[in-house]
Image (cartoon, rainbow, N blue to C red; front, side, top):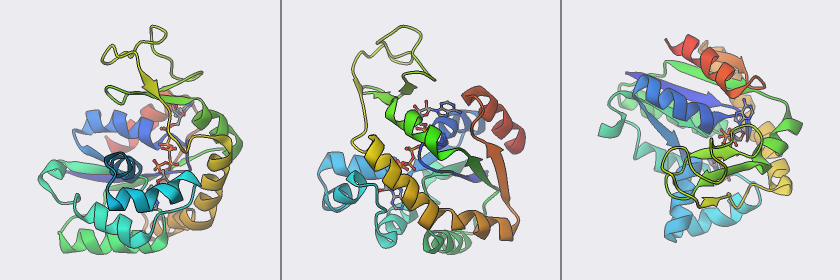
Length: 215
Ligand code: AP5
């Protein structure tokens, strides 16, 4: 079993790299952003509460997020391990995760932080789009499909963009990251399990570095 966290600001490549490691380690990616977007799409009360906050780039309440993640960690789908993407995002979330894992007799193997330059993140996020059919991620400059307008994975031709992927909201998300999420690096550095990888390298080079750490 391998349990890890991928940390980093919006656009650092957490989702992109989690998908690669998911295949390599045969573990499951648990993305709180994806879970929240699914709640918004379903029109649930939780989704309606979260939507207004996500649209302006703020952070959803710790209690709501911790409740959502505790229903997933330790379940059958995590039998081989998990990659947490987008969680924890505050020190109270990190503390709640430690308690949750201890109660389930689980431990974290790696916490890997992708270090990046904020300005480049605006370009990365504003150029991102996703296949509407299978969810595969692309980028206008950095990750194009082999055939223009056709998804490499499923052949789908419809693509969508996230509601919060605009320059104004990205700047607010970066601000929230520096104020509320950056202290988590210190939290894990003090426990001695934090590793950092330069997230400004190409997608392939970042994947290679991550694979070296986890193999
Ligand atoms: P969430 O969905 O987690 O968004 P985020 O953290 O802002 O991260 P992103 O998904 O935007 O970026 P990423 O690092 O995954 O980058 P990606 O790999 O796609 O959260 C959304 C919202 O939900 C939050 O704002 C908040 O409101 C709420 N929320 C979620 N979790 C929460 C929590 N725990 N607590 C409270 N609120 C929470 O890459 C971006 C693009 O760049 C892609 O197009 C990719 O192709 C490209 N790219 C990736 N790597 C590279 C590279 N090395 N070189 C060039 N291009 C690259």
